[in-house]
Amino acid sequence: MLTCIIIDDEEHAIELLRLHIEQTPFLKLVHTTTSPVQGLEFVLREKVDLVLLDVQMPGITGIEFIKLLKGKSKVILTTAYKEYALDGFDNEVVDYLLKPIIYSRFLQAANRALAVCGRNVIPINDYLLVKTELKGKMIKIDIDDIIYIEGLKQYVSIYTQQEQRKIALLNIKDLEQRLPGHQFLRVHKSFIVSVRHINMIQGNMVYLTTKESIPIGHTYKEAFTAFMKDKIMS
Image (cartoon, rainbow, N blue to C red):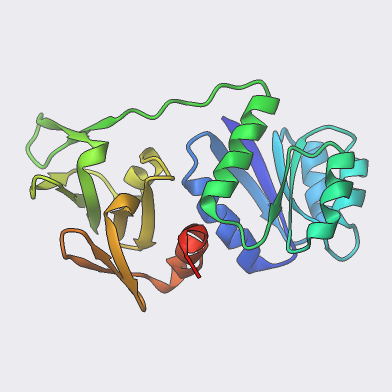
């Protein structure tokens, strides 16, 4: 597990990175800030493995921040400008991410940070054992069989390829954290979908191979669009 902090003067950029981190089981977000000065104070005071750092910020630039950090934590730079890449690598950053940051690229950088820090990737099982509404009963669900998940307060409904609806005694946030982020996307406060079962996207709706349609919530729209962007042919 790597502890990490996000430092960016734009709140929407922080929120996108927060969603990416929540999908990545070996990352733990410990702090966010729009102030590079406050962020530097936090990193120098606390144990932080990884800093997700914007380049262009008022007060202290990302490059100046790295020099003041003096190697205490590893750094991934985030920016909308390609021209800062050379400065970043000259300062031995782990990786350099161009905004808008899609999840697959973020995961690549996160795995690189894990290797640089000398940690092994935490394996994700290919199945889940979940409690049901019946006391003492647990069922096995193969992750590859899941088409989508619907949150129902203290329960979730898990829909599988066998056209079965399985009720599990879980909340949707806990289940989201257990699923591999490159295979599943939270698209709504009540829905998680399997990426490989997305058949069509139209407006604010996702249509699945099983013909169900799932709404894309406003909170999740930006992260969903960023994740799918590298698949779009123009």
